[in-house]
Image (cartoon, rainbow over the protein chains, first blue to last red):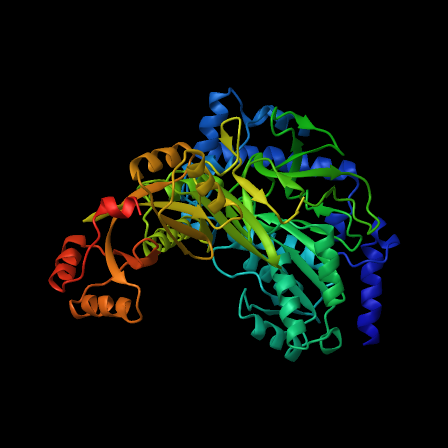
Length: 457
Length: 143
């Protein structure tokens, strides 16, 4: 025991870095505490490499760069990334399913897809090295929550095509913690396991977390019955009030995890114990902030749309992906010791996408569903509520003479049919309310499509 | 024998019934009979008025969804058991009612029953055979 302790101390002395002035756990000190110069040098090397790989192996990028007269040699400094075009979700959809892969398909050992069912999803392909990268960044993030090999992680993120479940899983295994891969749902079972297994770390979406807390309360579970140490939450927009409520109910700190399938999944950025922004793992993901309208690059401390470039992904390199998420980048060494840039909590979207119960919903999907039903006019309004911790989606649809019947059962039938069509399109249960013609408010001839009552901004 | 009834879609929201009736009142349209079917989310207002086409036009102009549906009117003496006897006739003939509503005819001390099925001709046939007296439309419109 003593020998192990000594070797640990010696180990620490050898890898001593500026981080050691701070009393916090860091998974990869070398990567997370570099000086700005070191980070930028690494980023430039990796940026040149990824642009080259994209140019050489992804026909989509080759054509796009060539058409603009660009070649990988044009990257001489980090600012040169400015010359290169953005990649959008639509671009990724167009090459569905495997068009963005930069390696032969047999080298891809896992795939995931983006949530939501608008047309074709975006497929993300991972090589063995990509999965190692994913494990690494999530291990860094979980370490921010003080996770170590003694911990038991109850992962309520879904396992499947969704990246949430697996991302957390890989990171936890990399650390050597015990993972309970329970997925979402079976709420009473979740609570039983929390208590029986003495879970130390909970991973959930904020809305599911609040729901869990509610049910736990009903079941008479108190913080004394559990051994919780920290909470990691993500995949949804949230407010500081929501975080406070989660922390109050579970009695531990809750830290935000950010990520997106197009880039890798959860693990692009994670919040440290300071809880004042998320550290972007910028040695692997290069962040920029742009004005979503002019697409001009904005500086530090300016708010705009986050754009990400994968610096090290093999299977699917992505250059300047427009996330549509609104945030701000803040540089400078953090109180936790890390030098990685921090991004603010996501405060909005630059498009009309809504996240309802973690699922991406676009108003255009609702419109598409309505147009499939004969006689239904695409005059609708989407209302999102969170009456009891869980999101509820209501769609108001204007009645037309074509669908009006003077029999109640016929009208209920139409309402159910619309609900089914919408559910088919977006993958979520909705409540349809038939309203009178021209009762949905129109501003300058255009209807106000979305009313979000959740106060997430 | 078939009476034109106007059916109006109403949101289940404060003031909507009033708005529909107020619109008709503004054009001096008198309502002879009224019934309201409602669910937690919407309602269907059914009216008998002297000039159904005119009422429909006015309501549509005021952004209501309106349909004209035909119903059959039956005259009953205002006594216990009379309504049940009519329903027995329908039941015996295997006729399924979509809806019905009734009101009292003040002048004649009679009750008027309005019936709707998906096959009105069959309904009229059965009622006539059973000797139940049907009320002509003109009489219903001008009660």
